[in-house]
Image: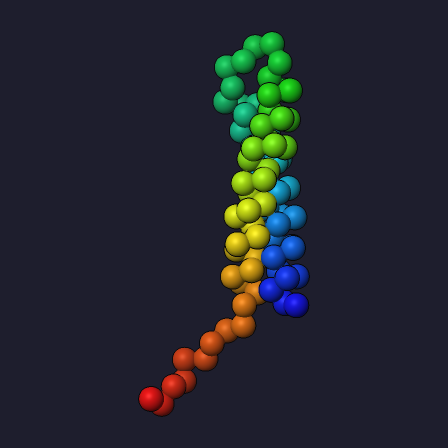
Length: 74
């Protein structure tokens, strides 16, 4: 359950950071003169946002895993 919760949280945060950050980056870096805002929104929502969500999911699941103790006496 802990892995699921961390994975869900990572997915949501990763998508939001990716979508807004990607949209901002496209707005600043695009040479498109006619529909820069549409390009930024679509790229953020459908390309960079989902990539951020995937990265957030993997990171969340890995950080939600139980820690292994390193006290093995062999």
